[in-house]
Figure 1: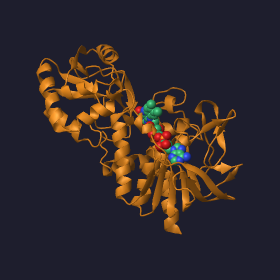
Figure 2 (figure 1 turned 180 degrees about the vertical axis):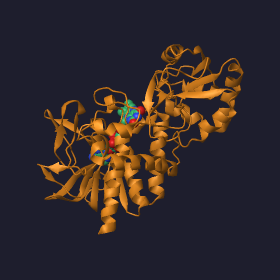
Figure 3 (figure 1 turned 90 degrees about the vertical axis):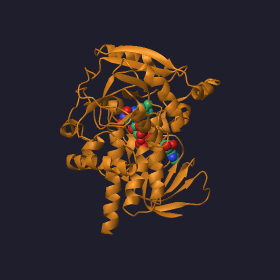
Figure 4 (figure 1 turned 60 degrees about the vertical axis):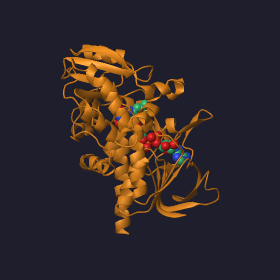
Length: 404
Ligand SMILES: Cc1cc2nc3c(=O)[nH]c(=O)nc-3n(C[C@H](O)[C@H](O)[C@H](O)COP(=O)(O)OP(=O)(O)OC[C@H]3O[C@@H](n4cnc5c(N)ncnc54)[C@H](O)[C@@H]3O)c2cc1C
């Protein structure tokens, strides 16, 4: 099977890249084993919250100059960084992924433990705040579903109280959610969200919550609304008599799962080929050129293309593996790099071409979490790295195609 581009990995970076390429008229296939980090992403796509030395970042564009030279953002360059960061929210809207107002600066969102996290693009389920030390309410009603253990109201209540908000906690007992309690494993955020895909169940919820909320400014609930689209939480918000503040649950993340689904749908609607539940097992390299790849399900059918994109994530998604005390990239066997706190990743040149034995592979690119040069936890930039490297590489391929 022949494509313009074969993309290995269907997480945030692989799918965004596939969408960008399909929108430009290129024929792509995305091969993806399974779950991606989006399933765990708690509530936003973040550009850059801190510098490597821990300095908080307000203006990510200005902060780029302070990153190390091999940081993916430095390789993209300031002008392109700014341009892509403005374009990305537009693409997300085309995928029906609603995000908060896309300013090129960090504001704050609430984490699963009630803390304030600097954020760039929170999903529209969540509020953004200008001041991390203040909340705009005096009295909050914190609600959880009886027995739902992926949402902890106590730390949220403490964090709210430290910001001057009085809290009352209570539980909601709703028959449809109670049914899930018959088996502990069923009472997971995804299944609770499944209950609220129907407006009838939201009406029942609202009939319980509205009378409880009369004395409060805001009702806080777990973000378990909108598995397939944003319709559920929008409907819920429209029926509430008080302001609604949704707070992310522990993983899996309902907004993250919804985002993955919406990206996949957009890619397929654009005519892209999606091979999910399939794993790329080996590649055929001819000198500095990839000729094709073979997957577990396609057997001896080779997938060939002009360009290949490695978007297989880090250890978490098996984009990198440890073998005999050595870290390896398992599909192409490309060189792996480690530098201090920025961890392991696939070594590339400035255009994100990986290498084998120091030799650049000209029609192969690496994007997203498989790259080195950044510290996702310390710098709060991993969603942004996935999105911006996907844009950088896709645009390069599109420009090459136009020129040739
Ligand atoms: C708990 C948690 C919370 C997070 N919270 C945030 C947050 O608040 N803000 C933020 O910006 N970012 C956050 N992130 C990070 C963000 O979600 C990731 O940076 C981003 O989703 C990475 O996307 P990716 O496409 O590079 O990799 P991945 O999401 O890892 O996707 C890689 C995909 O490749 C597939 N794959 C691997 N090997 C193969 C193979 N051989 N063949 C076929 N497919 C293969 C995998 O199955 C997977 O689907 C969080 C991550 C985690 C784990």
